[in-house]
Length: 104
Image 1 (tube, rainbow, N blue to C red):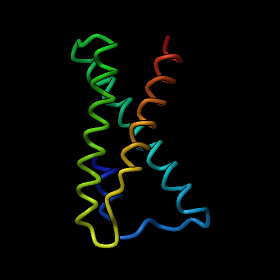
Image 2 (tube, rainbow, N blue to C red):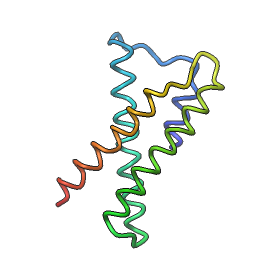
Image 3 (cartoon, rainbow, N blue to C red):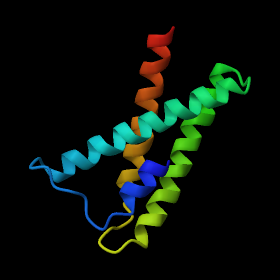
């Protein structure tokens, strides 16, 4: 969460020579996927059942994504984008699904 917050606090996303929209989408998918897996493992460590942990992790990543978009609204040069929220949720869901299948 701290890494996501720090990156979203930057006024501009660094250009890497690639299509900036593609980089942004990939960044959201990966960041929120990793966040969801981290939340899943944390919830499971507290004794919450796996299915409930997955739902909590998905919800936690989505809620954090919402707060991050609100945060970006106030960062000069950035804006809140509802499509980012969708991308965050998709990234979290994909990573959780793959993680649980690999683990099984």
